[in-house]
Image 1 (spheres, rainbow, N blue to C red):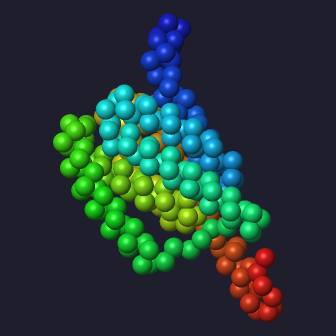
Image 2: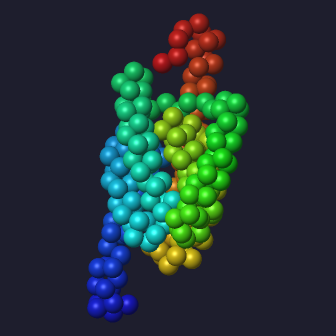
Image 3: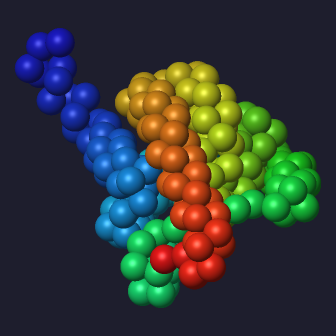
Length: 211
């Protein structure tokens, strides 16, 4: 790519590239369960709100609004946990909560799909389903449930195809990287969850409370 074409690409896609970088950094910090992830993720949410609105991916733009809300909640919830426990502890997800969340995601897919269709959005039902289940994954992430990474892996794989279709190549590449980060997050959070369970069992055997 020549210098002129590179400058044209940066000028045209500069905001998308900024969103890519901040998202990668924010999600990587999330896999490490670091509280710093939340202000960076918040910046990425706002950037992609603009990017998706300009691409007329209206469900994705709406998703970013919800992401801002969930990000603020997650920031507060994680901060409270760090204040009380000294660290970000992974929380178990009950089967009932899992099934309810997946059902809510299905209903949300239909409702958002109908709205997006009336607004003449691109790929209304595919985009709506991804939006709905992204909200479920975001909620699980804010609540510190390891299951969020399984759902992010599935959702992000489908997103890759959608963004290639919409010629958002940098964003498609970003979501390929996010699949990798989700696998990393799944591994690290499962290890943390197993370590917490081991510590709890050890404490019960010794008759002392877990740290």
